[in-house]
Each structure stands twice: as C-alpha cells, then as structure tokens.
Amino acid sequence: MTVFGCLAAVISIIMGSPITEEHWLNLGGVTGTVKIGLIGLTLSALALSTRSALTQHIGELYLIVLLALVGMLLMASANHLLLAFLALELVSLSFYTLVAFHKRSRSAIEGALKYFLLGGVAAAFTAFGMSFIYGATHSLSFSQIAIQVSAPPLSPLMFIGMIAIAIGFGFKIAAVPIHLWAPDVYQAAAPPIGALIASASKLASFYLFARLWMIGLGPLVGPTGVDTMTGGWLVILASLALSSLVIGNLVAITQSSMKRLLAYSAIAHAGYVLLGIMANNSHGMASMIYYLITYGLAITGAFALVQLVEKQYGDDQITSFANLHRQLPVEAFCLLIFLLSLAGIPPLAGFFGKFYLFAAALQSAQAPGLMFWLVVISIAMSAVSLYYYLRVLKQVYVFDEEASKEGFRSDPTLRAVAIIMAAGVILLGCFPDLVVRDLLGGLGVTVP
Image 1 (cartoon, rainbow, N blue to C red):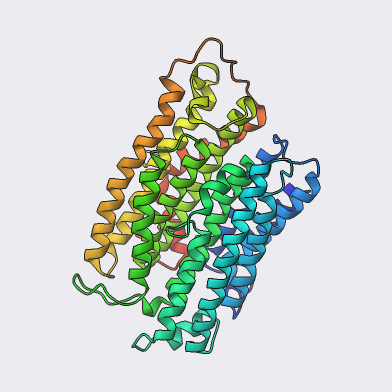
Image 2: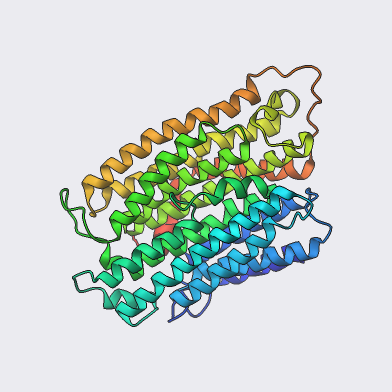
C-alpha cells in the first residue's frame, strides 16, 4: 500500500496542478522534479527496511516514514515561513522517532536524544530568526519579503534574523558549526533510517533553504565586485561553506567507522552544495538539485552495503569490508561506483554535479573574488576526500582477508537496491546535460 500510494503521488505530480504558485505554496518550476526525487529516495530507504530487524511494528514504522515524507513534500512546496517551519518540525519529530525506533539499541536511544536536544535548539533559532524577519518586513511570504527588502540599506533586524535562520537551517543540512549531531545519529540509526536522513532529508532541506535565500532574501545577497565582499547573506553562507568543506573532509580522514565517515563526508558535501545557493541564479539552483539527487542515489546505495556488512559482522568498521570483491563482486563494484561518484571522479554523476556547481559559482556576479577562492578550496578538498574513499576501496579490493574470517553472504534485496542506485549514478553521469537542461527549463531559462 505504501508503494502504491507513493506511485499515485508521482502520477499526480506528473499530471500537474492548475495552481502553480500562491501565497502559501509553490507548485511550479522544478518543484515537481524535487518531489519525485523525494518520493524515489524514500521508497529506496523503505526497501532497505524490509531487510532490517529494526522493529516488529513495521506498520508504525512506515506510518512515521510517510509522515516524514509529507513534511518533506511540504518543505519543497513552502512559499511561506510559517508553513516552512511547520513542515520542518514535522520532519524533525518524525526523524527523532525513527532514530530511536530500535528500542533495544542503547546507542539508538542515545543518538535520538542528542538529535532531539540539538534539534530543539535549532528550531528555537529558526523561530527566532523568522520573528525578526517578520518584524522587519511585516510579512512571512517569500515574495512579499523580497518586495519589502528590495530597497537598501540592510536593517539590523534583518541581519540578526538572517544569522538566526542560517543557524537553524544549518542544523538540518549538517553544516559546521551546527553539525555535531550528524556523526552520532548516522552511527546510531539503523541503515535504512540513516539513508533516509542522508538523502531525502538533505534534498528537501537544501531546496527550501535555497528558495528562502534566493527568492525571499535575494535582494540582500550583498554587494558585487572583487573587493566588496561585506554585507548581506553571501558572507554568512560563505563562512558555513568554508568551515564545512575543511572540517568535514579533514575529520573524515581519521574515521574507522563507515557510518561516521559518511557523516563527515555529508558535512563536506553540504559545503559544496552551498556554492550553488551562493551563486544566486538559476544555474546554481539547477546544479544544486542535480547534485543532491545524484548524491542521494550514491549515499543510499552506500548505506545498503553498510547494512549488508553490519548484518554479517555486527559492526560498520571499514576493516569489515575487507575482501568484499572476492566473495560479492557485484556489490563491491557498486560500492566502487558510489564512492568514486562521491569523490567526484569522471564520468560518474558526482563529477558533473561538482562541475556544474563550480561553474555556476564562477559565473555568479556576486563577489567573484570570494567565489573563485571557495571553488579553489572545494577542488582541493575534493582531492582530500578521494584519499579517505580510497581507504575503503583498499579494504574492498586490495586487503587480503584472513582465511578464518567468515565469508560474506549476499542479500537479494540489498543487492537489487545497490544495482539500481549504481545504474542511476552511471546514467545521470552519462547524460548530465539533458537533466540539467530540463531543470533549467523548469526554472524558466532558455537553453540553446
């Protein structure tokens, strides 16, 4: 029934709606594509849950996952700060519950508690920022806010509100310095729940985040020019991006747990995606969506293989992946595809995702000097990320496992999910321009 309901939702989205945009909701442009992506990634996570001993109450689990999906769909459509806040809290409360759903796991309860406490603080900052924005503009609608702030100068109320909003949303996208929950939650949660948080939640959060900054607060991006990089929200997001890129990639090097490695990798990827928002143009938005969809496919597939290893050995240590290619060559090849795509190696989708993001950032009229150096740092950090992804692949393909160690046993469902995700990464890498052109068309950009 869950699958049929999601398929019905996809058909409804494809058929379209007579209402494209109104005061509370935005249903036009690329919102439909984002929603289909959210539904697809959620179904992939649910497929992983069928092979997990997460709970005996599977009906309740699916109900909460669907509640989270409803919240994420509302986040993608929100054109009003109040609706955005309600959708955010629906998603957050659902995820707090899902992380703690494995009641017999002490680490799951501990991770959920940390997630809840930090999430409550982030929600307070979000509401605080929204109240300041309302006080400065007397409106909560994105379009009305843009009209009210179109005339300079930037008021102190708006600046405080933007900083508070950045802190609140920074929690959802796991950007430094509001990232401390991510490693604990990724490690504590069951792999299907971790995959859902890492993929669909990121797509919904970043899309809402981007629309708020680009549409609602677009006039306050800040001055242009090489030497004029002060003021506006560009500097706020630049600080989040820079710290996320550096800390996420460098700390990932030291990790011995695969889940924690993926968590710090996700923090670093948040820095890359922020470049698309900072571009403040349609190319940046299209590149961001393409990147998040391809990232979601790769991270979901990686979690499927983490679940396979965790089911076999009871842990997610990188050393537990040793000699995977000798016993399960298909799964090993899929993991190779996922990790190289996350590292940005051509011709996989992750490479083109980063390429489009970097190109959009360099073409932006906003502070080209700042954007240039952020792109340079991003390329350098991509090289760092290749090192820790290759550490995993070394265990998979090079390390010679001890003969006494029990061999891997395949799981048809997990193998199917991994193959489908790997095929998606390869196809989107082979035909990236067609996808980005379609996204640009949905944003109203004519591409020759």
